[in-house]
Length: 275
Image 1 (tube, one colour):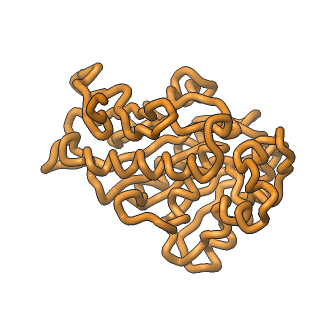
Image 2: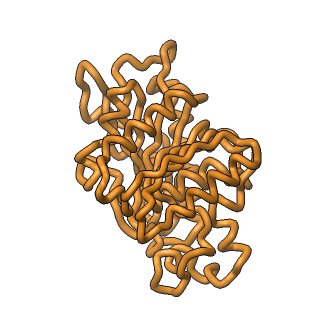
Image 3: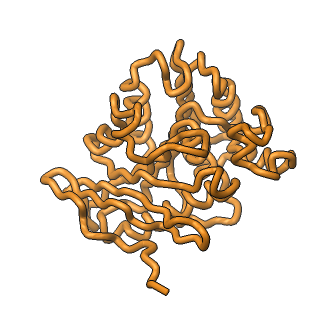
C-alpha cells in the first residue's frame, strides 16, 4: 500500500510576488472513496512570525454537485476568493463528498477534516491557527454553519473562529425530504428520523459559545426561504452569541437580481471585525 498523502503539502503550483498557491492538497483518504483535496492560496508575506488569517470556502450545489474552483462558477463575476486575497487573507477552497457518494454527516466530517489538516499546515504555510473562518454558500453555507456550531464529537483542532453563510438552510425539517429531493438525498434513510433531521441543521446546535456568525440572504429566495436565516440569527442572538443578518432586498437564490459585490463586501468586513 502506498504511503498516505494526507496533510502533505505539495510544491507550489504557482508563486508570484503577491501569493503562493498550492493545488490538490489531500486532506482525507477514506476507504472506498476518492481522495478529498483542497486548494490553498497564501499571501507571499505570510510567515510563521507574521501569520495571516485563513478563510475556508465551502461551495454550494444542493450537496450533490458543484466545484470549489470559484472562478469557474457564476461567482466569478465578484470572485470572493480574489477579494479575500486582496484583503490579506489566505484562502482554502475545499471538496467534500456529495450526497450520491455518502449521506450526512459525512459532509460535516469532511469539512472538519479539512480544517484539521489546514491547522496542521499552519506553521509551514504562515497561517494563523487561531484565526480560521468558514465561508459558504447554499449547501456550503449549511456546512459552514454546522462546522461552526455543531461541536459534538470534535475538538478545537477542527473549529473555526467565525462563520459567514449565504442563503443557507438552517433547519432541514422545514424542507421536502422525499428520496429524490436534495435534503432526502443528503440524509438518506435518516430523512425519516426526526431527531437525525433536527441535528443535521445548525439551528439545533445554537449556544452562546457559537462563533460570531454572519447570515446573508435574499428576501425573494424561492429555494431556501429567508426565514431560515432569520430564525438562526434570532436564535443565536437570544442565546447570547454574536450574530448578524443582512437581508438583500429583491434577491433570489444565489443573490439573483442583486449586485454580487455587496455580499462579498459585507462578508469580508465581518471577518475583519471578528478574526
